[in-house]
Length: 219
Length: 219
DNA sequence: ATGAAACGGTTGTTTTTACAACAGAAAGAA
DNA sequence: TTCTTTCTGTTGTAAAAACAACCGTTTCAT
Image (cartoon, each protein chain N blue to C red):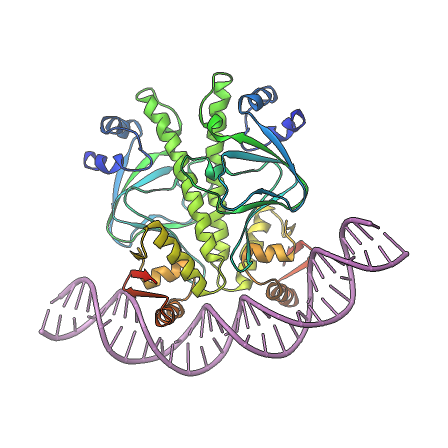
């Protein structure tokens, strides 16, 4: 567990908390480590979630498959990011989505109750963690609204432009890579892959952008 | 301001806090009241938001109009509900959406800094409010994910079924009213109104549901 | 190195949507 | 009341998406 402390130091959850304190809190918060092979599930839809979870290795997708097998990727989790926070509140019910490892991944679980209940040791940092948790969840909230903005667009082309523009802005460059392959991007935007691929190529032919694999340049 | 204390007692934000304490906190948190006529804006896209806000009268829409005038309704705010919490974190940037009064409305503003910084008086309740805030925002988070679930559906019919089923479940009855007229529902689901109206009537003719105005029954 | 699987692009067909234009009903104001 | 505005449903057309099937390329495991 110790080896992940440098990772944790750079997470939003432990922002402002030093190495020593994190080390102490790992015990205090009863952190549990768990590893997953590519494709394995961390949480499943309908499961009760009682942990706040930090990804320390690999990457995950928060996703949902409907009755007809249509997959919708809600969000991508990268190293240092958190998930499951939305289920920290008591009575928040079962998880609405699956969490699945996109590559081999390692995850730390923290018991929700222990985070929300202030303990005796290192309390100053503990309350800082609670505040961090709040900030993190409100950021996630804003990101969800942004994603809604992409999905609200009526055509595949507009959805693509909306998403790619955001990504360009976020990475502060007209050239950037996205964390999705074509199928995943289609699932993320909730469109058909082949139709999307077709639209991308049309846009390229019209001189709007260029791409090689998952590296895009907006023109 | 006093007259709204009974309303505040029943909000998620002040859950567990008594009348007397709320009264004290109104001053402590420097609450400001503001009223809006139907159609007026509470916040505008691009504005900096530094308040956590509780609706005590009327109803609001969180919405966004794109360049071409397509409106997207993100969320509906009812009496007792909160908005603006996602912008409480420092450095969260400008608002991504408009907040507009759907009918004549009254809103209480609380300064974000004063909520997050524990004060001297009534501190026990203050920290309870912070925790309430956290629970509220995580619930909103889950609701956004649910909305994403509706919007991820490929056809208007599926979107309608997804939304109406959720509403039926939430109201625990096959017969229920929705807080939208047709145009608003279309904006909420990001589809064309006339196409949606058409689809609704087809579904009615197929015996899937009935409706009169905004009252629906699933069969 | 080789076979299998995953990936991305292409095409054609069918279904669905957006868009526009309009009409009757309901609601609201003068 | 009467006039006006808003709301809802209807229809037709053009555009777009979903779906399915296929193929060459890349990636991966053995």
